Amino acid sequence: MTRKPLVMITGASAGIGQETARVFSAAGYPLLLIARRAALIEAMGLPDSLAVEADVRDHAALAAAIEQGEKQFGPVDCLINNAGISRLARLDEQDPEQWRDLIDINCIGVLNGMHAVALGMKARRRGTIINLSSIAGRKVYPHHDVYGGTKHFVHAVTEGMRQTMSGYDVRVMVISPGVTKSEIDKTITHRNAYEFWNKGREAMDGGIDANHVARTMLFAYELPQNVILQEMTITHTRQEF
Image (cartoon, rainbow, N blue to C red):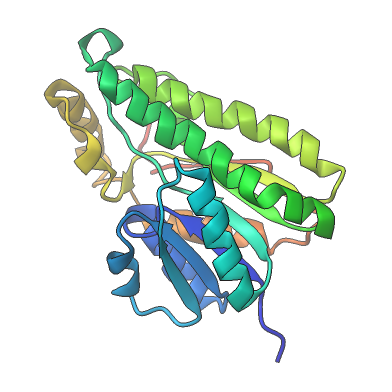
């Protein structure tokens, strides 16, 4: 029986990343799982998986993790750039240090992941990159000033990379979930921002389940290599904005 190709997921220790790991594992894919809390990944006990403790802000650490994973399972065929934080606040009310966290993790982390796998995918003329954005990458919301800016960045760099990689038959996609049941609310530290976000969440029964986001990515990945869902948005039916 031929082994399925390697899938790499960043931010795999919680929320959408953790559920994505479960969904892709159940579909039979070997996994390279990256997080700053590797013990939480290992606790899931997924077969054919390698948990590596690494920070997406550290390009060298990601490259080393990929080398380790590929020695065990073969080339990374799919990267799911999931790691991210949601430090919500109005710009003028926010600690500038939080801007740095948002930009370094949500923007630099995405760039590092793409750069670390791009050369190999181009050489093989095969591969898929799925970048996790947010509905806030397409619309502007109160208290989402810098966070929304980082997600608009993800959309822009994904489209640029998609155009670059298309000639090599490599797919680069972006998925934008709306309010989702995950642990991302734990990174919202500004009281007014949290109250705004939580009010919307309560109106949607807590938002969509992370499993639906994960299964959407699995569907997009398992399409033929010459078919790409360039951009996907998935929200609760009652999410008006």
